[in-house]
Length: 365
Image (tube, rainbow, N blue to C red; front, top):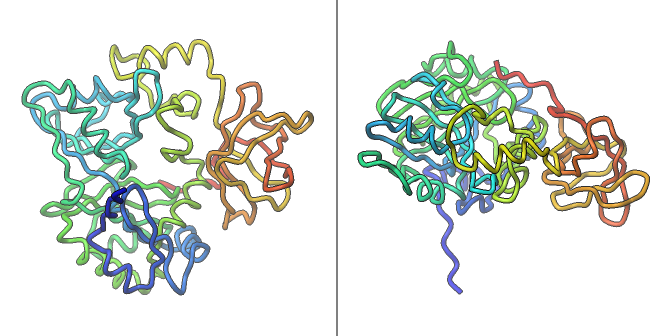
């Protein structure tokens, strides 16, 4: 059986030279953590100072042509018509059953041009689904390898951005072109103030080097995707393939706020309306350990009294900030925040509280 080769970021050689531990992510070989630091130190850098991430594995799809925004608004779940040019929106592409094909960010440049950032593993699928039914003149270009993405996050991120000549007075979810094939976006996935730079792949090494050099006096740290996962879990942010999937709808996942319920059309609309009216049979909640147990995806969640299985852990980790086990779980809708549940951690059942995330207060603005 042929094994498809993993794809590489423009910063791949830098990561290897820095002693990064590499692993596959959505068909790409990306850094998990760096030698001499590790997940805990990288996580702390973002919460306390500043970290930079190579997230070039994320997809980049340019949708352009007359009525591009109107077309996408008829397919994507959120209300894209409410987004002014120069602003971005978190949204979802659903299937007919209401399951999530992918969650993504849409950057609106104007009525005829939108940049979509889907997850790495789903970029090709999203492009194919949206190409079906696209009106004449609306084209979807795959820029996956033509663009790189660098994320900057942490309480000192504004200082770093100013040091490299980038604007810092951007509203949350706003973006601005700052040069040829370079845009700065006030978006992120860590819960800390920061931005994402979407740049030409040929500029990736230049920007990465500038950020590291200018941030040396600020305590900047190159961070891998291991810390990115612990940071997003502390925020309770969904990750496709865990809290979201073609089998898990956004209502069950607690993302009803990302659905334009008043819109006349979007993919999966009828199924999602029915789920909302009837109520989902499962709901996503945060779980926080009372003891030393560390939850992991796939572990059973059980009723604290009967021991009956009532759900499944979808994400789980050790929280470097709280020094305890946290995660997300999809549980029967009859259970909710404030309840004590058990999680089957190896051969023992550990006690966890169901809570509404985030676990750590966000500081996005």
